[in-house]
Image 1 (spheres, chains in turn cyan, green):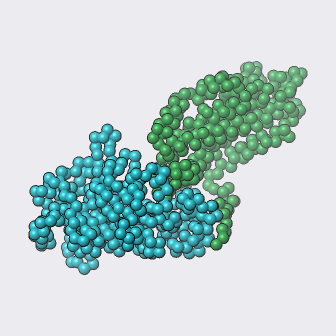
Image 2 (cartoon, rainbow over the protein chains, first blue to last red):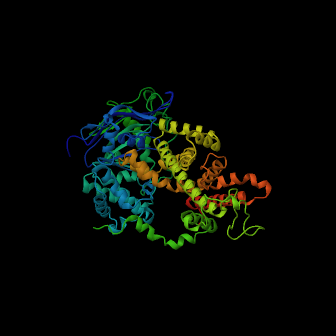
Length: 340
Length: 297
């Protein structure tokens, strides 16, 4: 992999500001992330933790009330924050594509499949109607749709759910983007189709050298799909690093709690561990660490000072005072007490 | 890899044409009436027994054929200058059809366009269009139309423009509402995410999806527009006199009503009523049919 990452977010913050400026919601707060070409990054967190806002920030499609207040988004050496709307439009769908939360409803009921799959080609590459049509057939084939020559002239209502899903995938890869953002693409699907779809995405990724950002609250999908993971809580990335290491030794108490709330085939626990309390109101965050009020290991410092990102080990950071250098002994102690 | 069938043809092949007529509750009679009026309007030159604008004072106020003093030569009688009422009704159908349909198209065109733009773009464009719409709707339509007609002067072309200008706001309102909900649909968001410009999205994704509503509104508006045209003609600011418009015929005949020349007002009145009623019944049926929430299959 190249030394320079494909996408790197540096101290990125995006806030929603109410009309009078009285309320500020820090939906994305000081996020630093990077993703290499061909890599897969999972972003997990509960509802309202800023995952989708982060995706919209990368696409520069924030709603009018929200704006990027600071930070840089370097994508293939260009800062996306500085791009004009017209320049961004040439990036969207062409270099960064996105699959939405409900791919089933993502097709326009009035246009044939060929028209819709070919649309990005016509918009971005000035392909002719006939040319786009032919490439649409090839794209349908690549997402494993049987008899693409007839399917291409059919309409969305003639397709099964799984096929529509794959068609949306075909639209996503039509212009050979470098990065594909999938925002909870499987939440509306049943489990068998989910598994097929994930396989397809992974194959497409391999064939086209795509980088993938997978936004989900399903840790099982992360384990299956991703090599990097970022855990978001209240707009901040509380822990990030390689998936295997986060799963085996979570450094942040929130990550640990998330993993503890997954049922496993092997365990014989009577009850699953739930995370006490509610996620904080993003417009009135507690002064210190935003997870402190719910954290079983919080101590005095957590209530007053926001932890910066500490390096935990190679390629892994955590926003927790327990991960601070010198806090090791204490962290060890806390960890054992928690497990017991 | 070849293109097998054009997409539209493939969709049309899905539904056998005969099925359309078998749809539940299809308003057959209203449609037949409208088709009949349209037929009469198109072939007025052939169908009308006399010239609708030339009369003879020697045969004024002849009653319809079935009444005492009527003759088969003038089936529906003659008017105050001896013109054949039947011929005038036949040519009047042409005026009503042309004015009605083109005015609805003008209103629909302006209203749909502005509705889409204001609904989709939002912000100040939306504010401007909607405030104009509010102002427009606050004005009584007929008074407003008379006012405009007084400024530009009566002619068939001007009437069409005036009716279009008076009624576009209803389209703008309805279409804007439609667009606001379409805007939230995933396929529009996917188009945004795919990098389509606003223009492309409005033209390719929004417009085709609001056509249904626009068509329903058009049929419902047809009745309103025809009544307004008749009212304007009746009031003397519509289609200018020698031309046979139904509203104008009623105006001409109204003095005779008290002395028993009923056919001069009642007959054109029935024509207007039949046409408006048919258009409304068809519109109501279409509205239910094309709205999935009201559809009962």
